[in-house]
Length: 123
Image (cartoon, rainbow, N blue to C red):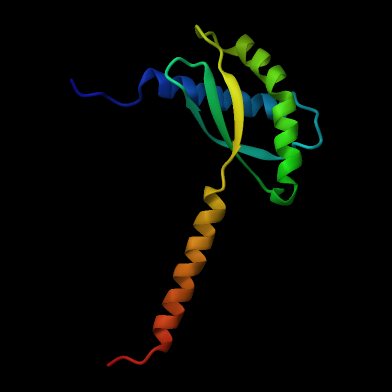
């Protein structure tokens, strides 16, 4: 049988991402965290753990942001439990998502390579 659309775990992960983003934006008062975006949530099959991927415009203060998120994880987990009702509430693990920076770096390398190929004479 072919799977259609999202699986339940995908829907739960997306709900966790949306609710956490809202909680961080509205409930957290820690100045270390600032403006972050949650890019993805990956749940283990038993929902015991959730990797929460985030980006920040303050990458120079990344360590402080991570400390703030780790410190707030218990509060966020408890508040998340009040919003969504699943059999196991995941332990939250915040992971910096550097894919945007890597993408920009790759784009610059491609632009440089294209510029160099424009300078070389054609046979």
